[in-house]
Image 1: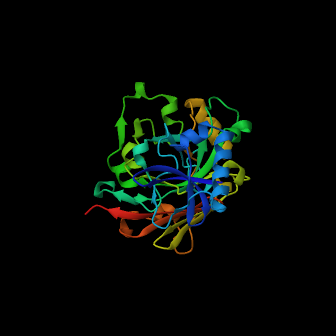
Image 2 (image 1 turned 180 degrees about the horizontal axis):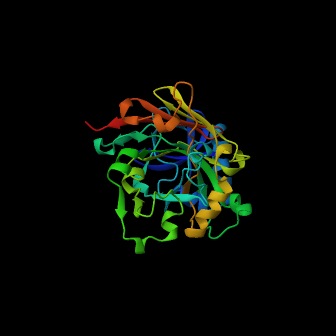
Image 3 (image 1 turned 90 degrees about the vertical axis):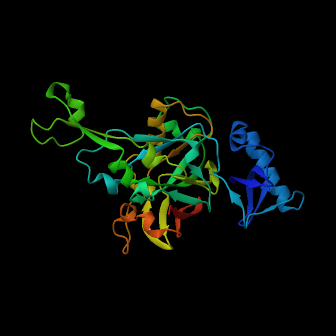
Length: 320
């Protein structure tokens, strides 16, 4: 089943897909309410779809739908950084655990909505990836049970403003030798005993700015995705495919990402985790998403397409 949220008749409305171009309104005010209702919520949605197909319930034309993110009110949005073998083969040392950043709900935007770039963001890249949406509270779970906590999956364009990340939100502090500890240097090459620089990068402006979590249009329920570690991902810029990859190319499986997140954070129903970007390039775009700079395509569409989940489209809007 595919579920979503649109603004309809002046208010947010939870919907279920009936056909490619129509949906039916559901009786729950928000996606979190349907998730909290568990099986009863899904049963009610399935009944509404059947009633719509038989003409016993009105349908909504989605031609000019005002899309919101499928769940516009998660308590948290986590992203798993650099979770792709294409990127990790360049690492000085392999990662020992998934790395996370966090976004607020103000970063969310919906299908067919603009992605707004400030001039200050500098070179900004798209990151096409699946999103796990949780069904229940999860804390310290084992990877073998991770998918039991998944309500469904959607897709995101996890925009990264590399320009502001390295130009404004990164700093190297040269410390005195007594303050440099082994863990400071464990992840990087050290260039002699005089190299006492500690590097810090902060992701708030570069990852969590407004519209940097485009998501949707649909949330696909878990039963429709047999294996989240075998999904083809494609990214498009102005109609051209710049990356074609698979979640099989993840450094950490989806289950490991979920389990690791629940070690550090209490995950609540409706919360979201971006599980890892697509990165492999194409013939015309050999550097993949890393070499695809959104600001060069002002006014054009950038799309994310994921097997079984659908296609998310957003227009690039670079401030004047």
